[in-house]
Image (cartoon, rainbow, N blue to C red; front, side, top):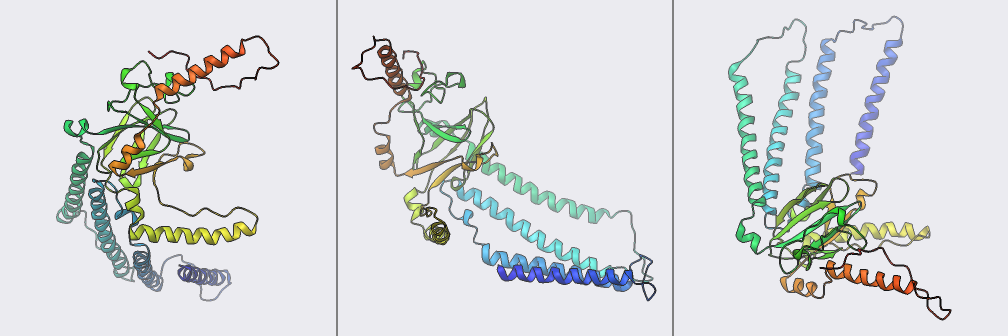
Length: 392
C-alpha cells in the first residue's frame, strides 16, 4: 500500500511540474504561444491518451483492491439462518455493478479518444434513435426489476413470522437510550408486559407497567443472551431520540423510534464459541492483537497502560448518529447452546421483584430516619429514589 501511495504522489508531482511549465510558457512575451484558447489537434490527442491512462489507473486500482481486500469478511461469517440469503443478494448486486462499471468505463474512455476533436472533422448529430434508447432503457429496467423482486422476496421471508413460529419464539425487548442498550426478557409466559416512559422511576428504568400481569416475570439484562436454533423476536423502543439496532453478524437492523415499537426476528445459527473457533476469525483476532501489541509498546513507553487483548464477541450497535457518544453505544451479544441458555436463565431477578425490594429498602430507610436521635445509632445511607407504588 505504501508503494502505491508513493507512486500516486510521484505521478501527481509530475503533473504539477508539467502544469507549471505550461504556465511559464504562457507568461513569456512573444514566441510561439497559442493565445486563441482553442484546443489544437495535439491538445485533443494528449487528452485522449490521458483518458486511456486514467482508465488503466482505474483498472489497476480495482485489481489491487480485489487481490488485497477482496475476501469480503462480512459475506462469509453470517450467524443467522437468513444471513446467507442476504449475503447472496449482496454478492449478486456487487457482481452486476462491477461488470457494468468495467464495461461502461471502457466504452466511455475509448469513445473519448476515438471521437476526439480533429481539424476539418464535423460531429454527426441526430435528434433521436428509438432503437438505441429502447435498448439502454429496457436492459437496466429488467435488471433492476429482478433485483427488487429478489430483495422483496428475501425481505418477506426474513420479516414474516407465522403463528406457529411466534408461539415457540423467545420475545426480547431492546430498549435504547443515550447512550446504552438494555434487554428485557418476556419470562416464562413469553409475553412482554406493557411499558411506557411515564412509568420510569428509580430502578424501574425501562418504564414497565407493574400492574400488568404479563410484566410480573419480565427481567432485564445489560448483556444479551440468545440460544442457538431458537427464533428470537425483538421488540424495540427508544427513550429519547432515533436509534438503530444493528447486529451485523446476524444481518439484522431495525430503527428504534421514540413513541412506537418496531420489531425484527431471526434464528441464531452459530454460537459465540463456534464463531471464535472459525479459522478466519482466529486469523482476524490474531491480526488485531498484533496491532494492539505494537501500539501497547508506545503506550507503555509513555507511561500509559497497555491495551487489553481482543476477544471476539457479537455486538449490538447503534447505526444512527444519536449524539456525542454514539460510537460507544453497544451491548455484548452471547449466543449460547440451548443448555447454556437454560443455565443462564436461572435465578434471574424480575423487574417487579427489584422494584418491590428497592421500595421496601427505601421505606425502611425512611422509617429509620424518623426515629429519635441516638448517639449509638448507625446513620442510614442514602438510597436511590424508587417507585413508591405497592405491587398489586
